[in-house]
Image (cartoon, rainbow, N blue to C red; front, side, top):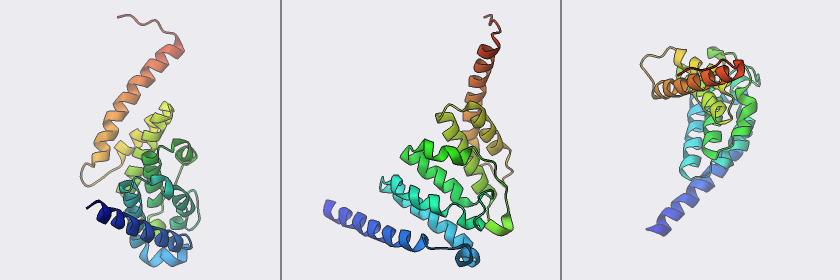
Length: 186
């Protein structure tokens, strides 16, 4: 039983290496017609890497792919950004993600095919990473943005963002009180 699962894991790793090599050569014109398939493939790769407990292996690939889906414009958000943050969370590579979460982004649905779910995940993961890095103001902003994104039905990330948003509000209230040196009476 163990050797069979080991063989399957080895096959998946071999397939991932082939996929990595082919995806790394993509240009926007190559994926423009099949952009949904491209994003689904990236999502599946991230899921496989997380399942194999090797999320670190996906970071260099996703760093290279971040702007391909937005025609090499780093100021336009696309679904690869949320997958990149997801893999950074699972690999505990928060400092790598720091530069990504501190920037401001625009959206171009016609260019990237981004959906509300992708934007929601980006801001939720950004808030999560900011919270871990003790950047509470950024966490507040990102969780708030995740809560304000309109969706057809409530998303699990919005419920999680609401919990973390409440926590960040309490932390910021305490920081504000300490910074302003207002005496607290109980």
